[in-house]
Each structure stands twice: as C-alpha cells, then as structure tokens.
Amino acid sequence: MAPHLRSILVPLDGSPLAERAVAYAAELATAAEASLLLVRTAESPRHPHPEQQNAQEPQARVYLEEMRSHLHATGVAADVAVPPGHAPEALLAEVDRQKPDLIVATSHGYSGFRHTLLGGVAEAFVAAGQAPVLLLRQSAVEEAPSFRSLVGRRVLVLLDGSALAEAALPIALELARVLSSELTLFKAVDVYSIPYAVPTELMTVPEHDVQLAWEASFDVKEAEAYLNLVMKRLNRQAPDTAIRTRIQVGDLVEQVRGFDSAANGGAEADIGLIVMATHGRTGLAEALWRSTALNVLRSTARPLVLVHPRGERPD
Image 1 (spheres, rainbow, N blue to C red):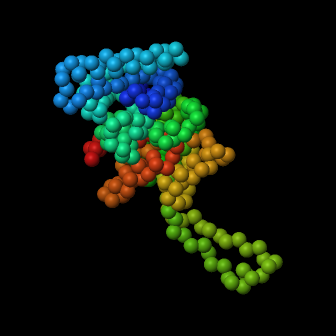
Image 2 (cartoon, helix red, strand yellow):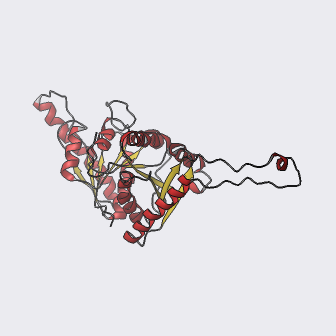
C-alpha cells in the first residue's frame, strides 16, 4: 500500500514568495488529515556574537506564530519550529528530526542564497532525499494570480521503465488518494518508425484517397505493456483510486512543456501535480534522467513533486 501522508513540513524565510507554499501545504494537510509544521531558522552570522544569535530566535518565532494564526483562522492547525543555525544545514537537521512525509517549498524562495535552478535550500532538500519535495517554481508562482486548488485534478507521474523512476509511485498514489484525483502513469517514447512506402503512381491519382499507415513501433508497444503491468499492480494496492495510462511520442520535456501550452483550453488543464523521481535507470541514463528532472521543473508552471529513490545514496 502507498504510505499515508501524515506530516508535511514547510520551510519559510519571511519572504512572500516562500509563503506561497503554505496554501498548498495547508490544503494537502487538510485533505490528508496530516500534521503541518512551519519552520524558519534562527539565521545568524557564521561567527555570531552570542547576543546577535539569541536575538534571531524570537523574531523568527514571532513570524511563524503570525503565520500559524492566519492558518488557524481558516481552520487549519499548524505547529512551528525555529532550529538554530543556518539554512540549509539547520533545515536539513530539522527535517531529519521531524521525518516529514512531504516537504512543500518554493524554489528560489530564500534570500541571499545562490541563484541555482532550485535555489540553495530547495536544491539541498532534493539532493538529501530525506522526503519527497513538492516544488513551486518561482516564476510560476509570481505569474499565478492566486492559489489554485489541487483537489480533483489529475496527478501525473513520469516513468521511464526503471525501478528507480518507480520510486515516485508511492507518493503519487497517496497524493491521488487524498486529493480524490485520478492518477495518470505517463511515459514518453522516441519512436524511429518509418511509414509504409506508398507507390508514387497512387500519390498522383486524384480519385484515390491514400492514407499512410503508421505501425506502432516496438518502443510504443513495450511502453504500453509496461504501464499496464504497473497499473494492474497499483489497482491491487488502491482499488478505489482511478488509474489510467498515457503514452506520447517525443521528448519528455517537450511533452511536459506542451501540457502547459495546451492547458488554457484543453484537457491538460486538469493536471494538478506532476510527480517524478530524481534518478532513473543507471549510469549515463541515470544522469540524463536527473537532468531531465531539472528541465521538467524549468518547463512547467505546475507544482512538481521530486522523489529521491529510497535506499539510493544521494550524490
């Protein structure tokens, strides 16, 4: 069975951008009846004077208490924690103590850290692999006019046929369950098929309606068989969750980018979450899958859940 979503942790730094993660975490906590923990470090200089270090903790706690009061007014309970030290080290230590089932954060939400794709803190959470991380991309959050509920919207999990990529399945299944959503197993395949040759004389005869026949490639058939096996396995684990499969031809990142471009008026609008593992296959293929995870984050405005495979040592 998929693990229950019992606890959710939200790292904050006092910025409005980082706070945008709270609404998503609160909705998930309510739907899953999970505990919600808001965390902010008592940030201090690397070689602080004792009085400077002690002054940071009350400020961080007052801020978190205000956030908790806002949530309480909406009927959502939350706890707060102010670990001493610097992000990301202090936050990683707090995650290790709390052992949440999910971390919800905004990429680039932390002021003063290097401007990598994920931002220093969010990147550290993903690399540590202590828990799945639901990431909200900074530019997507800034452009979004308001919070959009995830309840009832599809959860799309990206697979590549490997056991490592399947590490994303348990949290994807659990998110679909608590959000009363459909789970879609998605695989993109590159196909190198050639259409049947059509005689030139037929192409030049106007009264003939010639339609090229395109046979599904071995890769597509293999993907269908693989996803059907995974679907049957998940159906036994969660018979009350609707599960379907989807295969599209072409590059995975381009397919994800296409979801966003079609979302305004098409069926893609009901995709609420995308879930994927940070590792897939082995060797070079694994490195490519990890870079794919980063490119997917670049390419989508949707919340992206990144999962480090259990039992795999982070790089």
